[in-house]
Length: 315
Image (cartoon, rainbow, N blue to C red; front, side, top):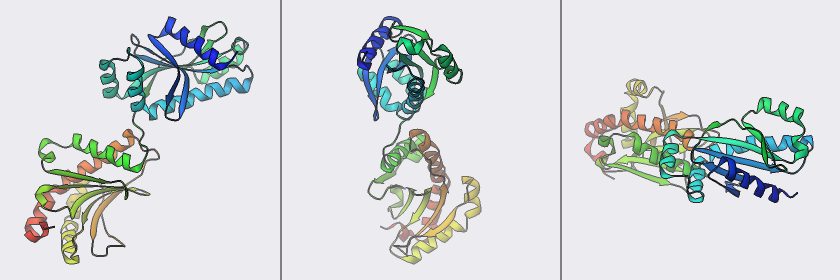
């Protein structure tokens, strides 16, 4: 019995008893699910991994594959939602909106095994004690042997690059600012050098700007990049004299720094830990901190431009 034949039988079983619709060979990221189905009534997505072997190793690997799939659907949640909407008419707009608002979906995971494998109840019981959310389908008899327990899984968007990550932060910042703080807001993403600039048109220049740079850590800073070293020193020192009050507003100690390749430039900045995975979820705290940076420093910037020298605002 070929696995393709098993997958077709399982797809038909899902359609008859569990789902509004199901399909074989559903791709997500760099993986392909043997069978994927969706139940409109239960608002549940079904994922099935099919195997024709009956030895202990094959059975264990099949369960392990589904554990990997759980992480996959979580990391590629936005892509999954988009593909479900294109694949199944039963995945309706109302459901899409709810899923995107709650940032989670309900899944049922199954392994589909041949009858000889399903007869190994002691082994299956042992595995399912640790993985009760994975059910078992007898693909020979085409029936459910063990029900899967529904599992709510968080979903988010996985960014493919640092530039995509910064672009996500750019979008998230807009939603986090009040209408007043959105007025005059300018943003520029530089994919080649991997940084995001944020400034306000009222400043009359972008030589003074906020910047997010993901390196070994994520740096969020305020940069002073005039050609004249004295302008940069004076402005940077203005902020450092107010270091305590700024730190109190941010809840994070600010640092002072320069630029090895542009010795006349200055910056003040904070560092936050860079996440292992670049996702919409890990972008949230960066966007939150950037928002806090804007809220805390924008009034100080206005005072600095006025107090030091009106010429500071010239490009």
